[in-house]
Image (cartoon, rainbow over all chains, first blue to last red):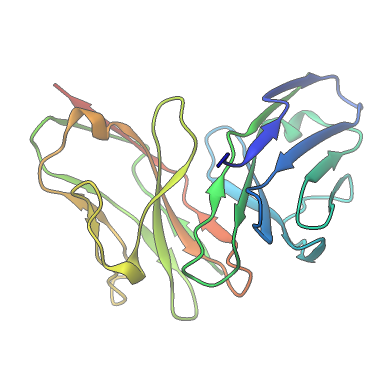
Length: 115
Length: 109
């Protein structure tokens, strides 16, 4: 079946605009994660969903960042009033559960550039 | 604090040479560690995890709790091993991953 998909693949926006990034997880995967990777840095955890609830939002860098998930399906990450430091690749991953044997499968990422 | 350190940004070796990609971690509990790989124009994928004690594509990694290390090794590098390698730590009950900054492995012919 299809893997994790993300859209758009690239997004260029002006400082101060809002953006929405979308993630379609693998069908049946209950766990969904958002990470971001800024240039020269490792991936940083942002938020974790189990079903449509988000028990761990500890990685969201500011209140300009929010995310939601519809059931065990699509998730959107919204960044309001974008800043240049938000420029990064945003990666989504899904897994069948949270036991250690449940591998996280990653999407191709959305490259966000804030001018 | 939970942290993963990969000290080398770039490791360049010749085909057939041994490879060791270094990874050190900081974690207060019993760590679960992984290596992820990203080949050119492909998505990030799991290479191996320490709990499986497996060898994938000739790579192995041993968890050394005394040295808090999880170095990735391969005795004879191949050109197709050229990729970005990330060491990652399981960050707790939610299985969120804590990543190092990655090491680019370049295998020269």
